[in-house]
Length: 283
Image 1 (cartoon, rainbow, N blue to C red):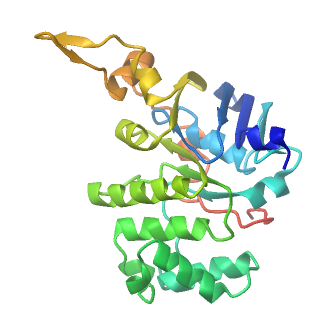
Image 2: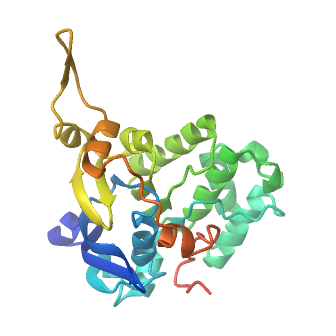
């Protein structure tokens, strides 16, 4: 690997635009994601988060702009991009009729890996699911199901993983379990692009946070940099730093976007955010 390749961002997005008929969803989106980091794309419902993830994961074509993932252009080399990534959507895409282990073995076989049973056992141990490995996934709690879903996404060791609102519908304890899993991924060198509408999630996890509003990135920085956008409040001579929620609402206003035609809800009927096995087109 050359020095330039080593220093290149894992994900680069430049001027990405996308419209659905008369609705302009993305309006020239730009950002870079450093390899091995957690990058949070923060925005309200309808902001364009899922549309962008679907473009980066080659499930949707952009109308304008360019994007590279792991050094591959998403438009020109979609096969190489799919070999470099895994996508975990808003709802866990596990087969509830199968056991946890059987789910993992199935994906390992689809990726044509040798010894899929050993791969499954290793991931069950890594995600603290060994004791539940022979139970049907339908018996799992929300947090366990999501951990299994992420484990399935990691089969084949993709260097980049997209997590599209991974804690949607989870209870607080399950969210914490998923957060711990995401931190573990980054600590082991995986690049994570996380979309979320939860301010505390971005605050807890992200190395950098980009705020997507009405199809454009209106701010991009570390948590400390975003907090500096607002002056500290003074209460009885005690300095109070603004929270990420203060920054977010000041930037986008307090009126949430509710455009139901945006691809965050309409593109896939709220259920089809699955993973794309390496080199396989989604049918």
